[in-house]
Image (tube, rainbow, N blue to C red):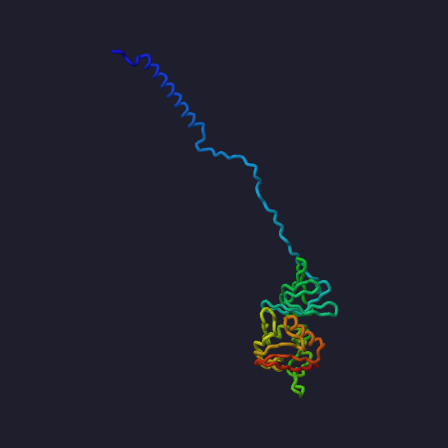
Length: 265
């Protein structure tokens, strides 16, 4: 019987396979000791530049007024703040101006207030005015403390009232006294002020003696229609300065209009 495989061929085959096994073993040993144990990620280079934005924030500069309470020639005479309502009286030379929040003078817009200061804004800057040193924090002049209201209002004999000027000055220089004795709110017609509604009047006060009652609507003072906070306070300023010795207050009561006549002496 003829042999298919010779001993020589089998020996050569075993020898070749042994060499392959040895090479495999050496490669395995080298891979264990020298190659990294974790995979390596390939990152393709890119020419895309990172995006960035340059942001410039507008800065508001706050300019404090001098010790005399002036700013650009203006002086703060009185200030009243209640909720969102601000009313301030400022003076330049011999001219005084009454402003409410959002109103402007010489480009300066009234934006905020405290007990003894107001802040205006112009050209992205804020300017602050303070009350004079001879005024108290609520705007009261030190010369008004001794005033008594006992006989400040009398009848003139013809249905009207006679008011002592000192009483009006007291209310004007200390606006907080006004709102302790009377409460008013704007009567709105859409977005327009259409007078001021009287919410309450304390008994025995000046406003009570003037004939004002809760529910009255103050329509005008000496023909000046009350359609803004500044106009309402400006009316008090004019009375206190003696510019209006005769004061006519037009009101609406129970859907009827009537006038309250007063004299300032």
